[in-house]
Length: 404
Image (cartoon, rainbow, N blue to C red; front, side, top):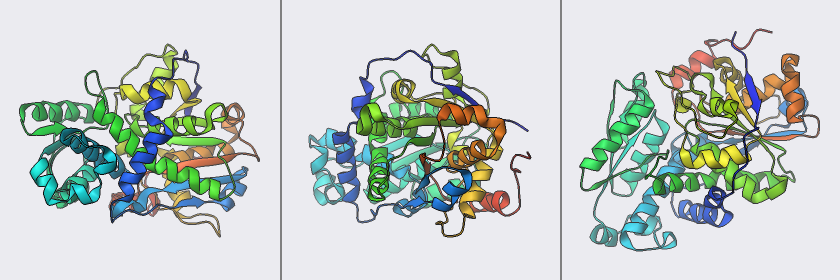
């Protein structure tokens, strides 16, 4: 079976110009914005002490985003904040003045009217954009890549969006949505990746994800701990860049070791790290993987600058790694909190447990300096967003775990 592939970050260091985008002050603005929503509540950071002991580390925390705004995934944090920042910019207001109350007010209708937010998604980002647009009286238009399951499309349609499944891969959907947005006078592209000339909105989306990172930091601190290792998954890299940037700013020279994990089918960051020159490499084709949220072959140019400078390791993970994570989080050690984690949410925890338990990865374990003093943080970025698929993997044994 396919193995976990890893590489230490040996790329040349760059100036920290992009790191300021995820400054603590910017993350505080995003958090205050989200806290203005009546639907806001802090999601749990499950402390899995039993699992930590079982695999031989000091402690393990898993940030559980299945509770976020009732949407079963973290993506709404980025989409909602980007809408807020866009409206603030268009109306000449500061984001501190552009809270939920103003965004749903009669005054906004007079000041701003309505805009259509175009986007591409495998499911969670599009649903978050559709939900936020719907709650804030705006419109959304969503294009989804081929192979998207019907349930993911239905949930976006249920949020009031115009949405359809195309015959394109994710990156092609992004270009198609952007082309439509450019032809619509009263529209804007709202995407969680960046390219030359398109950077403000992806930056705001990353800053929106800072709310989740800030919560996790405080929750671990409240438990009297500091993470020594952070395992974060990457699709285009916006989330990975946001988490990396936040913790690099929070801890400075004492930043935890940050490990970027991708699906083997779409491991563009890993591929770029292997080249060791700091330049982006892409992955093309259908990128078939159960980790649908990670099936992205072109890195976000903004987040890449943060990741390539601050991440410690890059990993290409096979399908069985996330299946293992889904099972272990769904059936935890006695006394540990259950975490219902979907295909794109469980790969960090699954990979961590495998490298701790399987001596085939002892070199990786030693390179990471994982031992009985380590405190690990993983982000379960989605719950069972596709319940049928979740049951096939966790209950029925589809995608077997690695047979040692």
